Image 1 (tube, rainbow, N blue to C red):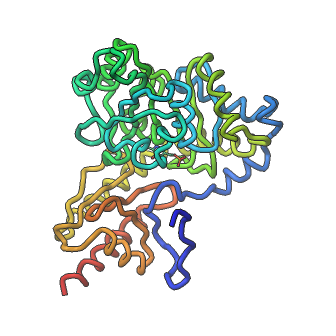
Image 2: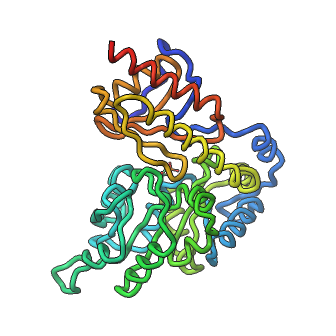
Amino acid sequence: MFAPPRPDPSLPPVRVNLYSDTQTKPSAGMKEAMMRAEVGDEQYGTDPTVHALCDRMAALLGKEAAMFLPSGTMCNQVAILTHCRAGDEVLAHERAHIITSEGGGGAALTGVMVTGLRGERGQFDADTLRAAFRAKSRYAPAQTLVEVEQTSNQGSGSVWPLEKLNAVAEAAHAQGMATHMDGARLMNAVVAAGVPAREMSAGMDSVWLDFTKGLGAPLGAVLCGSEAFIDAAWRWKQRLGGSMRQGGLCAAACLYALDHNVDRLAEDHENARLLARGLAQIDGLAVDEPETNLVFFDTIGAGITAEELAARVRREGLAISVTTQFRARACTHLDVDRAGIEQAVAIVRQALAAEQR
Ligand SMILES: *Cc1c(COP(=O)(O)O)cnc(C)c1O
């Protein structure tokens, strides 16, 4: 029940994969960079390529220090462990990844309670945050951390505007709370908004970027913060088994991604708009306006569940993902080109035409 299913051999191969940008494969150039990587012992502090990646990320995100971890989920969990203690309260959007998709890690590992805040497109404003503040007393949990997601995954890949981020950070700090940014797709936000990464993370005490989404690396995420924060976080990295050995192999892929796969995210955003326009022309589908590379759409008007639509298009070689009963997600990335998008629209149209017969 918890193990992912193996591929079903009765299905044709996937021709257009819009399931997730996590399914991007390392390119030939990236693999070559990995082959050439100078490596050492990451846990022992002697892997030069991991150091190069961490230095570059700290500079990019405007923080003192950085730490290489295997995944974004571990970045979130290490950050919560470092900022909070058992019984503390974390404030995040009600559809944040730390609530929906990390196995209750905040509660299981740190012992925090995470309270979900409301707001359009996966975002909340400073007033909503302030309304969730509790008067300090021995009755109330200590509120220690505010978390934001840039871009917001379940918020249709929306980009938090800089002013909103800064206002939220200011309100949190005024209340004595720390701020953490889940920047799984931070570079998508940077490219879409034309705002430098360090400005977007300026109000954040900790921030991380995932290399396994649209950046196309096989493994790795980098968590950044003050020297004291990263120093304390190393204890948790070690405890959780996140310390690596010849991690430079993967850090080299991440450095390659920073050089080659950031600016091109604009193409993914263009393809997402093309996909949204195509899907919106199909009867019964209600499509969210994409801001980055995620296209969410509702299938209820077509009289079909998202699950059924996903199963039908999968039989024609198109992979999409299912969010809720009548909501699906299609995600553009570096392994899908414009022709693939056009094919995807045609396959969905065909699948729904069959519905109407
Ligand atoms: C994918 C994702 C994560 C988790 O990252 P992994 O590297 O898959 O563990 C966290 N937050 C958001 C918003 C994500 O989309």
